[in-house]
Length: 512
Ligand SMILES: Cc1cc2nc3c(=O)[nH]c(=O)nc-3n(C[C@H](O)[C@H](O)[C@H](O)COP(=O)(O)OP(=O)(O)OC[C@H]3O[C@@H](n4cnc5c(N)ncnc54)[C@H](O)[C@@H]3O)c2cc1C
Ligand code: SF4
Image 1: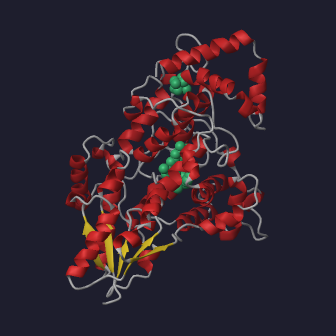
Image 2 (image 1 turned 30 degrees about the horizontal axis):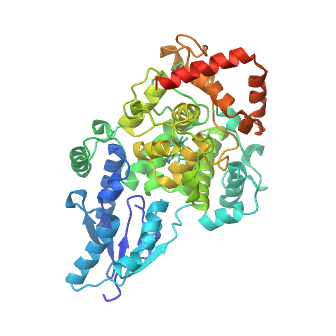
Image 3 (image 1 turned 180 degrees about the vertical axis):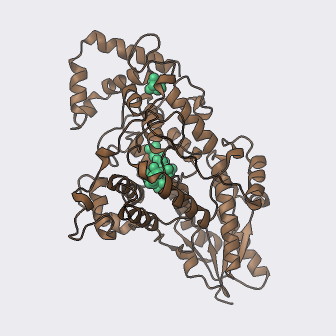
């Protein structure tokens, strides 16, 4: 008993493979779970996210107890301010009970802010604090550093190929890519014209524990976004696996084809809705990739669908984490285009006549979910073109999505969507006009604006803002091999035409 360790389990580390838990000894150690104000309030989190995490924590703590672990659990209503305060309280409780703790053990958090705080705990709390690497990811920070060192440019595609080989996913008997190509992205870009039925998602009725959490979150966070009457997330590993199984059987087949599509009639189309489970530990990245490969090998989905999914999880997800830890803390300060415009208030209501944007914002606020193309090419693209303040946009993304943790949110928002990292994440800014949104989906048909018009009454705001962006940043953009032609085309237009478009765009911005 004298060598007892206090093992802090964070809300995004709810897995028996969590290193801090893996080495726990039931008779000796004590696990600590804490719902604290600082983590629940440092941005205005979506209520779905708070409810998901609190409920998943309570369920996971109960299963740890069922396995014989001793658990201390502090609920939100107990009023603890921070994780440090929770650890301090637990240490005191153990001391008073005559069961002193000799060390605090935890797995590295997913956010630089917390890591910095934890680095000071040993001195502040007067107890040894041991931070363990989070080896639930498929590339360690060291792997990524080794891969990145000496490279002039980091590109996900090369990282991804190495990961495919390393984990033997969709690799043929000669070690090459299954089907002869590493990437089937070109087959995964079909626009949406309601070509096929979208399957009804698996219904889920919250259990008593989740219903209690929902009531508590509703009363403790009255001003946060999130319509909890629609709460349908899985809160245990078994339920998350059931949802993933549903995806494999009902949506994976079309996942690749409509990966980049935008649909009026569905917030999720054929997407998997598993990011939140992967990010909090209810699902494991290698297991989901292997399961998708098995579906392909059984002939139940195309290679393009399986490769498309595996690229996201084995490629993008691991890559963005590598970039985050490789480039922080300077990364968070990036703002390549000097964007300074305040975030419009309607980002918190979705009240804008731009149909595509309004729909993406409203479902984000209500459900805590939007798929990748909505996040990147509708909301992020608008923020990029309008020059919205990078920090404010990143804080918004961190707040509104159920799957948002800084290691994954920041590189995607600051890097991929806003190009604030000067191209570390993506080879070119993801800037697009209304034409792209029209091609990818069916929002424009229901919009007050016309995607074919750039100026004048009813012109789609994305169009003039796009050309204003090209105009303002032409010196930067023309140096980019993939943007140079567009800049050249813009410069060849008549000066009067360019001026009219930019002036129109300024008017659009004034009305924001
Ligand atoms: C501006 C912006 C912000 C984003 N913020 C987050 C975030 O906070 N948390 C988050 O998990 N994802 C984020 N993403 C990535 C991606 O949009 C979501 O992972 C995805 O939409 C989640 O829905 P899904 O599970 O249905 O994904 P699917 O489309 O079904 O994809 C399968 C899985 O691939 C992984 N994945 C796909 N793309 C990415 C990516 N670019 N980076 C990391 N993982 C990826 C996810 O784990 C996802 O569950 C962001 C993307 C953008 C452009
Ligand atoms: S017309 Fe423009 S604003 Fe309207 S839905 Fe299409 S792209 Fe969006």
